[in-house]
Amino acid sequence: SQTIHQWPATLVQPVGSPLSLECTVEGTSNPNLYWYRQAAGRGLQLLFYSVGIGQISSEVPQNLSASRPQDRQFILSSKKLLLSDSGFYLCAWSVPTLGLAGGYGANVLTFGAGSRLTVL
Amino acid sequence: AQSVTQPDIHITVSEGASLELRCNYSYGATPYLFWYVQSPGQGLQLLLKYFSGDTLVQGIKGFEAEFKRSQSSFNLRKPSVHWSDAAEYFCAVARYSSASKIIFGSGTRLSIRP
Image (cartoon, rainbow over all chains, first blue to last red; front, side, top):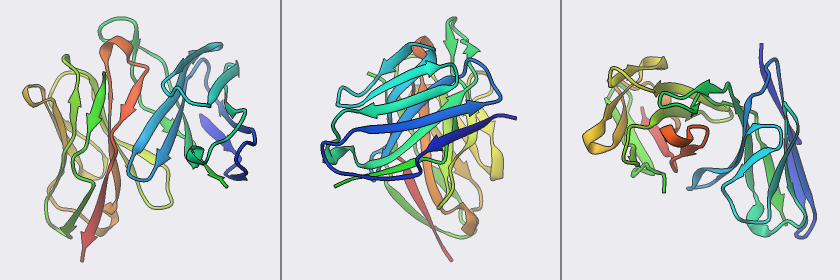
């Protein structure tokens, strides 16, 4: 069966420090991978998604970056954290599918347990 | 740009009463549509999805949703809520043309009155 691991679960970091959150998926190949941030009253904000190694789509033009060094590994990073980076970060994966209109399709997301980041 | 609107931030209903949570999207064509639930202390779980076909879809826990193209809506319903339905509910949308990009609404928090 497929499982998703996300760590660390909790992180308290000073402003200006670097960040690395890691997510790995087991039991599947070539998954679509996602990073979302959940802040109170703002729902889940899509940060990055990836349909393959080295293929990263960015939705947030801020000081965060993502990398996919291996097929089932997705890393969220920052060189210098801001106070506004505080939040609950969720990694998710889905099985890639063929789209109804060609190209890629959408599929059900399976979420990790999340990483709560507090920037002080 | 693709967007999802959940106009109700917080809804309180009595146990046993019916429920409807609203979701509207801004996209001209039929998208992929989802409803997820996040219970206190638990992760996000899929309730139901609509990709094509019958516009009324059934999900888990007695929930259903109806896709209305003319209203760009995908509202979630349940005929009789239970105290365990208290949670946060999220609508999500993906466009056919870039279906890997799944956008979520801001969520609706549901409280149940005993």
